[in-house]
Length: 125
Image (cartoon, rainbow, N blue to C red; front, side):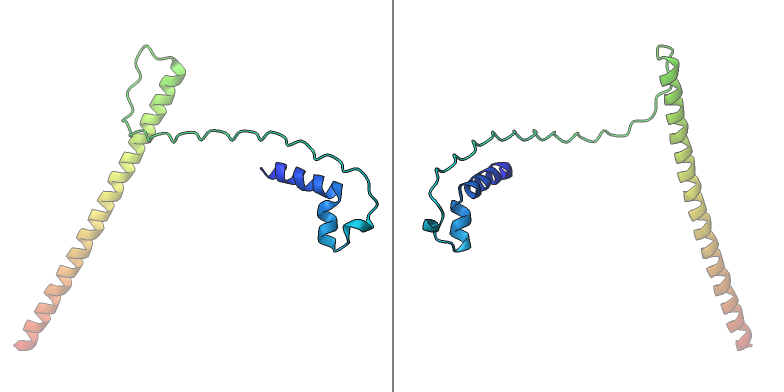
């Protein structure tokens, strides 16, 4: 569309009609010469069709390699399984670490509460 408009405007400038009408110069002041024909409009190239969005594939657990699969894909599957296993182990370790930290915090709070109660009991005697 922009190319077509640019071609039309360029044709008008070449003919002098657009330029003369916007510069304030009278049309009669320019010598009369035959108007050059406007450039033919080039057909617009059709837009590329939008590619449909691919639906997200659900995560599937890695399957162990079977004897029918070639060696290269089997290694790829094994690497994928090892990576998934490593990620799962890291997730479990993180959860255990968080649980241990929570237990330590609770234990520390209980010890502080017990010490406070003992101190209050000693102050009463």
